Structure formats: C-alpha cells, structure tokens
Length: 301
Image 1 (tube, rainbow, N blue to C red):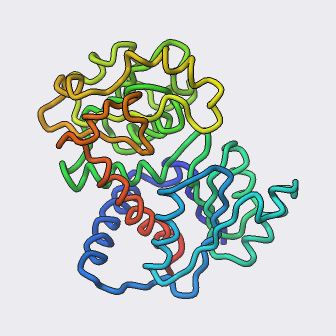
Image 2 (spheres, one colour):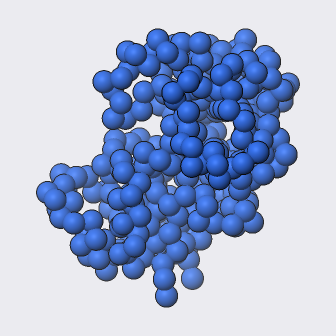
C-alpha cells in the first residue's frame, strides 16, 4: 500500500482538510480536559531539521508524546544526509525504522524525492515553497473564533514567500478570496497564482488589500536563507508594516495572524502584537493540536 504524504494542502481534499481542523479542535478539548488519548502507542516519528525551529519541533514532539508515541530529532549533524548521503537512500532507511517522517528543509524538491522513496508518510514541516502545517493551525484558529472561512476575504501583506504560497493554496481548498499586497518583484510564485485563478487578487496597496478583510496575515520580510537581503528588504517593505491603523480598515470582526517569530517594529508594529484582534498565540498553540490531528489521520489504523 502506498504511503499517504502531506507535502502541501493539495494532498488532501477540501473535506479532509475541514475534518482535520475539526479533529484538531476535538483533540485540543480532550487535552484541556486532561483526557489521556494514546492511539499512537509504539509509533515513532522521525523529525529531520535542516532549518532552525521552535514551534515546529516542540509541537510535533509534544504531539507525538501526547498521542502515546515518540519523536526523534535529527539535525544535519546527526545524520548522513549532512555528509552527502543521497536523499533516496536516507528515505529507504529511515522509513524502514520509523512510522512517519517530518522534514523541515530548504528545497521543496528534496521533500518530494524523499517521499517518492519512503514507505511511510512524509510530512512537510516547512520548505522554501510551502508551509502547510502552519495553515492547518491558522484555519483551525479562524474556525474556533469565527466559524467557517468559506466565502470570507483574507489579506496577505508583505513578502510573497512560502507562507503566502500556502495561503494561495488555502484559498482554493477552503474557498475564500485572497488579496495579496506586496512590492513589485516580491510576488508569490506565478504557478501558485495560476492554480488559484480568480480566488486571488494581486495588489500593491496594503490598504486596498485589507479593506473589509476578515483575516489579515503577514510574515517576516527576510526569511531564513535571505539574511544577506535583509537591509534592502527593510527599505522596500517599509510601507507594508501591519499596524492597528491599517487593521482598522478591515472588517470589524477581523483577526490578525502571524506564523512567528515576529520582528516587532518591522513587518508588524510592536503595539499590534498586543492588540485584542491579534490571535498569534492561539495560532501557535494550535500547531500542536492541528498536527496531532494530521499525524493521527496519517498513522492511526
């Protein structure tokens, strides 16, 4: 039987994604009630990190423990991948010893290669192209606080990075309208925009993107691996800072999200992080529960 992978939101049907979000809410409730629920006893998740992480590592590791399983952390220093072993060889070996593999890496193609040779589910913990696990948490957070996002308007302000790419896919899968405000030359990948069709509108003015929006999102202006561009990006993106005044243009029910870590005073003003419309801490916690739902979906018999 071919393993079921989760490399992007497009690997699940819209109905499966909604079920994952609702299941994440259920698992969160069980956890808060102190209910012991361990469907993954004796199951092992290998976690390969080529990029630094706080939320991804802790949420997957804690999630596996809460579900009765275990997680093994592997950095490039800990594996032969860091010494040049072919990805397909590592995939064959690790998938013969573990029940699933989560990978946080640079090249999305490396994830696809690993999945092609893996006998067990492979999960994208972040690549330069996509961050689908974060979107599960984001959609869970919106569902908890505002109900269905279908038909709503979502604004992305800032860099057309992997998070923006994933929001484009989310617009397709969750059926909402996405407005992207970014400087010229920093647009999200054209292939993703083409896939989304008329669900996505590309703009230059952040005020136009945010007007009437029900959800506003941003991310750092220089992602991991772009440190040498940071100074130039700071100047280029300065008009795209999300502030309370910008958020005032949105719908009165608007929520503000950021996948964290946030650079206060850059892509988001310091005061907005403590604004009652900001739900970044709920987002962060929901990484744990949304991913528990995902791992259960991929592994539980």
